[in-house]
Amino acid sequence: MLRLLILGGTTEATRLAAALQDWPQLEVQTSLAGRTQQPVLPAGSVRIGGFGGVAGLVQYLQTEGIDLLIDATHPFAAQISQNAAAAAQQAGIPSLILQRPAWMPQSDDRWISVPDLGTAAEQLADLGDRIFLTIGRQELAAFADLHDRWFLMRMIDPPTDGALLPPGEILLERGPFSLEHERSRLMQYQIDAIVSKNSGGSATAAKLQAARELSLPVVMVERPVLPNIQQATTLDAALQWLKMHC
Ligand code: NAP
Image 1: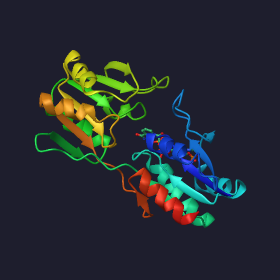
Image 2: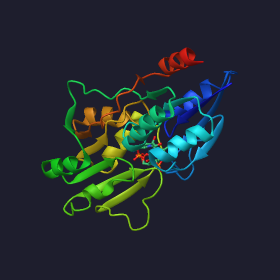
Image 3: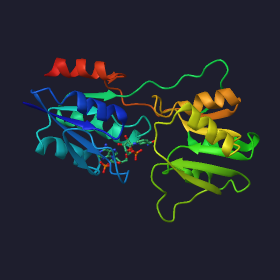
């Protein structure tokens, strides 16, 4: 029997673990970073917490006898993806990145593409007073100096004590979000512009459709560069890769 480690924290990782439940030739383990207080737990065994950089991950792969690695972390979880690629290479095991495709703008979208959140903050100068930040809770400090704006900040768990935050309101909710829900949020809070990471996927895409309908600008932070290893964008493609290695 082969041992597969999935680096998780995404819908794709959870679906992959579920799809592998009836593969007798594979023992599946998912690793979560431990950022979310009540995470959705995937099927199979689960471990939680960092490994301690590349060296810690290499040691983990070796002591646990891991044969295959799939990095199905979030497109913006850049550090763990770099670490995973390096660790798999050092441990001499095949690895794959499973990452959903990025969202693409439609002709009637008003997107402003930026490389990072600092640039996103700079872009807000002319985009109105009331901004919807849909970037999670970890990087809100990028907007903390913008005292002349009001921010609606959406996240699953509240920010940690002492986190630097811009003025505004915290909205705790977990997707998936419907179009109706997103439309009503934008109108209820009289939002002028949205800041989003280009996460892709369907769970949080309705805000983009609602913005399109209301002709609101979206400052879209584009994805960090991935390590140069094999990639799959669908569950089926990841399963094909596994079949080749089992
Ligand atoms: P990151 O910046 O790439 O990683 C920071 C450190 O967290 C890593 O070096 C590693 O610590 C640990 N880590 C990250 N993912 C891990 C995993 N699946 N299992 C064990 N350790 C992990 O990652 P992040 O942006 O903080 O994201 C953390 C997790 O949240 C990821 O699993 C990601 O899929 C999920 N997530 C992230 C975002 C986002 O926008 N960044 C959004 C939704 C979900 P060590 O160096 O100690 O091993």
